[in-house]
Structures are given as C-alpha cells and as structure tokens.
Length: 122
Image (cartoon, rainbow, N blue to C red; front, side, top):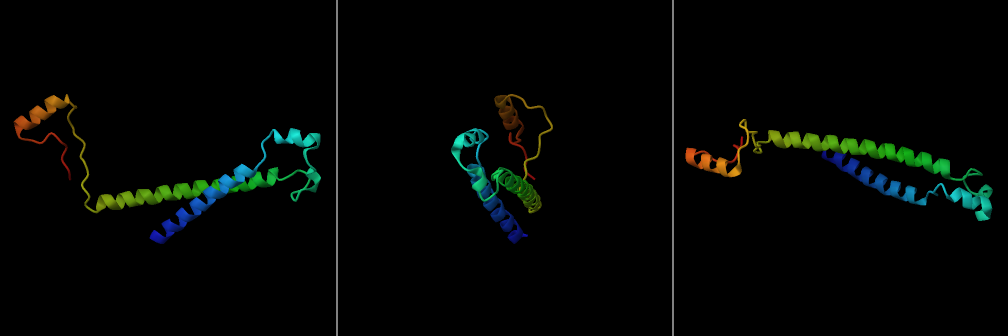
C-alpha cells in the first residue's frame, strides 16, 4: 500500500505542475480582439483556424479531473493512516462530560479533590 500512495503523490505533483503550465500558456478572452486587427495569422497555426483554445481547454479539463481524483485518493489514504494510528495504542484525549467552568475554578476544584484538571487519556 505504501508504494501505491507514493505513486499517487508523484502523479498528483506532476499533474499539478502540468496544470499550472497549461493555464499559463492559454490565451485570455481579450486576446481574440487583438488577433482580429492583424495580430497574427490564426489559419497558419498547428491546431487549425480555430486556434488552440478548445484543445488546450479540453486537456486542462481532463487534467483537472485527474487532479481531483488524486486529491480524493490522498485524502482516503490519510484517513486510513489515521485509523491505523488510533488502533496502534496511541493515547487519545477523551471528551469531558461536564460543562466547562472558568479555568481558575476548574484548576482549584481539581487540585482540591485530588483529580487532575486535564482530561484523561486512554
């Protein structure tokens, strides 16, 4: 399971960097107006007369979906790791059943009764 988590982290980082790169090379919506006044020959591009907008948009959308899937997978791995840590005998703080009083009153009452003022550990 450890190698699987490492693989997902590596894929997650690579896709994150690719997303940043793809978003930075895309043209903004305002760039179309500049091209209309002789900004460049769009018919001579590699992606055709429409330009690279739809192709880059589709690739960005697919990479974003894979990025969200890897994010969810990493969250599941973290939850499983937390459950295993809880079963390994690591102390957990119990919730107190009493309404919290002032800190000074709680410290005095705990010291007077011989009980610690801090919550018990399992």
